[in-house]
Image (cartoon, rainbow, N blue to C red; front, side, top):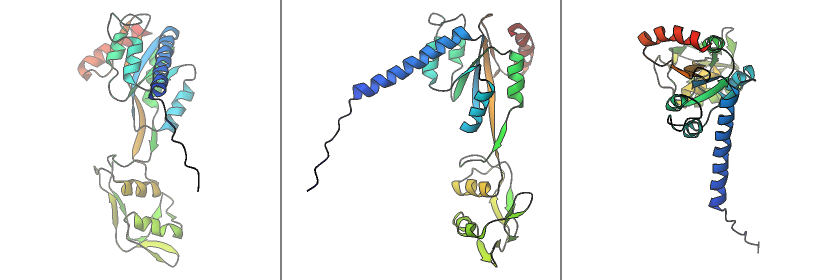
Length: 243
């Protein structure tokens, strides 16, 4: 008779202590970054993809990114003017709402805004994304891409499982009538997102939006999310003052 395995008891106090230790380390790292860098940017990420975020990090190796718990980052900076670790930095904490991160850097405001305005990366849309165009596959042989490349015939069952009315004729995947994968404005299903990927159609754009900036030397905080009529006037003056 096999020996019964002993039940291992995991101490919840140990789990909690590791969590506290992790938060403490993050807070310490954020405070160190405040002392090291002149500028702090609050940013949000549209269509998050780790591979592109890694590419951005590689472009700013001398800077520091934090993308984690807003509450922990805010506590490290100080939530009020009485708690803040640098003058007026509590306004950065107030801007930490939703899925946002922090970029600590010594690069100028102009350089940072110019780089992020230009940088974006196309990618495949995932389930739940909004379709940006109508995609129709014409009747006949099923092909993809600008070069009209044929699908391998062993993919026919997979395309059929995803909803396409495919048939295999003389080693080629075909459909008897036009098939609509999606319409503009559709909320994509998992099946639709997989089909778009098979047809090499990218509808998502990875983009980092700069929301606010804090300059340590001047203690100035600029919110780039303000209404456009106020923001345009403030941007020109603030960029000059922050340099």
